[in-house]
Image 1 (cartoon, rainbow over the protein chains, first blue to last red):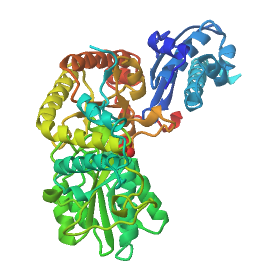
Image 2: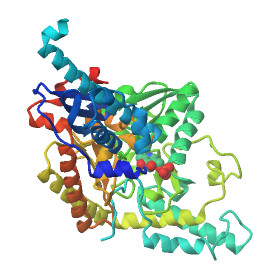
Image 3: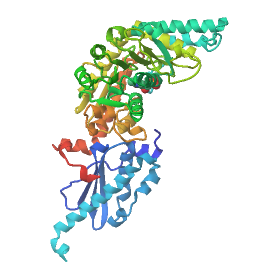
Image 4: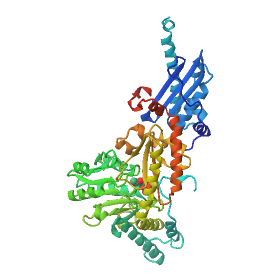
Amino acid sequence: MAYSDKVLDHYNNPRNVGSLDKGKETVGTGVVGAPECGDVMKLQIEVDGDRIVDAKFKTFGCGSAIASSSLATEWIKGKTVDEALSINNTEIVEELSLPPVKIHCSVLAEDAIKSAINDYKAKQQVDSPEEAST
Amino acid sequence: MDLPIYLDYQATTPVDPRVLEAMLPYFSERFGNAASRSHAFGWTGEEAVDRARKQIASLIGASPKEIVFTSGSTEAINLAIKGVAEMYASKGKHIVTSQAEHKAVLDTCKHLEKQGFEVTYLAPSPTGRVSVESVAAALREDTCLVALIWANNEIGTLNPIREIGELCHERGVLLFTDATQAAGKVEVDVARDGVDLLCLSAHKLYGPKGIGCLYVRRRNPRVRLVAQMDGGGHERGMRSGTLNVPGIVGLGEACALSQRELEADRVHTGALRDRFEGRIFAALDHVHLNGDPEHRLPNCSNLSFNFVEGESLIMGVNDVAVSSGSACTSASLEPSHVLRACGVGDDLAHSSIRFGFGRFTTEEEVDHAADEVIAAVKRLRELSPLYEMVQEGIDPGAIDWSGNH
Ligand SMILES: Cc1ncc(COP(=O)(O)O)c(C=O)c1O
């Protein structure tokens, strides 16, 4: 199968590989997919105020899955949480020229962003119960 | 060393230069139709076909009259299974096969199920073998055919065909075996092994693509088939169509070479396979051998690299041509049905790669390929959240992933 240059670039030079301290209050972690399906993405964000100041990923999956998650971290870094939430998988498909059989990789990357943000938000609520109760 | 390195000998093989040389005259000056009885052009073609029939028969212990030429194994499988089923339907409409067969067998059986046949798909052992006991237990009064692969194309596991042949003959049931991967790689003798029908394909044994044959037993018992191709009545009515003389010459020469060099090929590819596996297992942990460590082809190694997805690994080994056990590269995202039948989990099936070694593979190539695989696995594990979990002492297999997608 022929991969697009952008997929190859992310596969060969993945951006933001690694892990953040998932115990930290300002870090949100999303893990999506399943080994049985051949894709697992872990995406983490570190938030300062309402801005994502750092993002890291690790992915088990095909080249397109690796590229989708690498691109996702690149895009959300520096964005506000709300801006990151508005990223749609079709933008990833377009940017990486993913073929139809690989669209699920972009869906997974979008899910990973949302899951990391949800985790971050849940932490804020638990950590500030009085705010949450108002 | 030329790059990329070809390690996909189960998919196809290059034509041996000696085979090509034997074929060439039959494209040009010796172009005659082997069925032309009235002139020398035809006789030359017929002689070449007769010689090839002898060469093929000799490789598998058959008599030349028992060879029916086809376009390859897929056609031979269709002819064998449908041909027997239709001919013997009055005896019974039950077929025994296994879950680890090639798609050509499975889909042919599915087709017959729609025509009212009943098919038992035996489960192989975890290493991919079908036991004689399981075949014995599946045989019924109305069983008309047992169809089992000799050497599996994905994992290289060898079935105990001789024992199964004995059983089938005792019980008066015909045995068809798909020997596409076995012929020329391990000893095959239809007389000794009690095989009634057998297919092979030239392009898996250093011959050209698009030519193969079906062996059809003529004595004890005489097997009859309903032809699947109507026409001029070639091949004793079993397969009409003008014979592909250059292809047949190539198949014959390929069989003759494979017979002569079987032992040398076995030693050569077996040593390379062991060298490759030795290097991989010494450098990496969490690698699983799929298939049977003892009963397997000498030239095939199917490995699962846990926590690394197969397609991404193939992408990472640019210099090596291999294929993935997971069918992710095709339109379907399903992992291999063979690994599934062996009970290999879908996670490991997604991590599997088949390496195939051949007559023209060198030690230098094997070392280079192994080193590249090792480097790619290490790099991809650094990227793998599953490997990270394992490093942290978490077992990814113990996690309930169902909520994640
Ligand atoms: C075990 C087995 N059976 C059947 C086939 C089909 O053979 P052919 O390509 O000659 O149709 C193959 C090869 O793809 C094979 O490996």
